[in-house]
Image 1 (cartoon, rainbow over the protein chains, first blue to last red):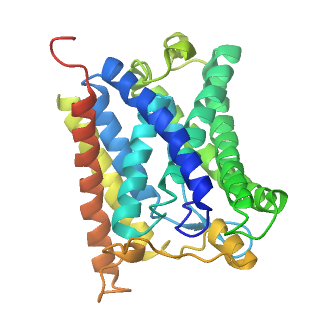
Image 2 (cartoon, rainbow over the protein chains, first blue to last red):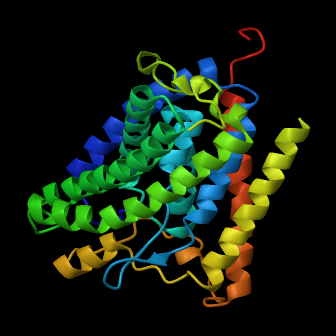
Length: 232
Length: 96
């Protein structure tokens, strides 16, 4: 989903940079308030792991391949703003050193994978946990959050491509449909991996899921403390 | 502190395994976006020439050992950069 230079019109690049900058400002400000010494090693470790995981390309439909994004797990364990910061580090290094994603499209890539691909999984997970309040709800929320987050991130990328009429001579509907269909399958894989990792953390290191999350204050805290590790 | 060190060590080992698998067996990248863009005729251009395009050292393209080394080094770079960003962002001692 890394959009290279040349695929988006400059106006779309500017708008996505502005939107992302808005989240960067609030994200860094919130991180300065709540990021703890216990979260920093976890944040660094998960960021390095998802940088590495993005190097593994597995085949999906047709002749295309996919890789994990990592945004959902980062959001659920650390909070969406910390997930945004982690994804910004990953995408920045990928663009600067490897040409994986463009410089002019960096704002769009962070918007798709670091904002949409992080906040949507967190919101879906939050709703599922609040609705179910048990282990099954946590796992279902992790799966659905990752699936919906990946698909909506792809829809966002499709919108940017479709609206870039100078660079991408096809309509929004074609670009969005093509991206959404492919990324549904990627989302299923991401959902399964996210649910497995959250399930393992819930059993082995529940303390890591109970750290204060770097999230907007209006979103409140996830009620994970109420979920017993060995519960249903 | 001991738990943190163990977690980081496990994370680095897992990352190295991901890098090795990614370079040795799952290296073929044909992302949906690239396929769709190629199909629809969009053209990529570089406004910045990256030092290691496609995660390969120029002159050592296709060399799995070199690719694994690049991946492993950059796993550590990402770890250190994120650690540094986190340390810069955490609330100061006065506020804490």
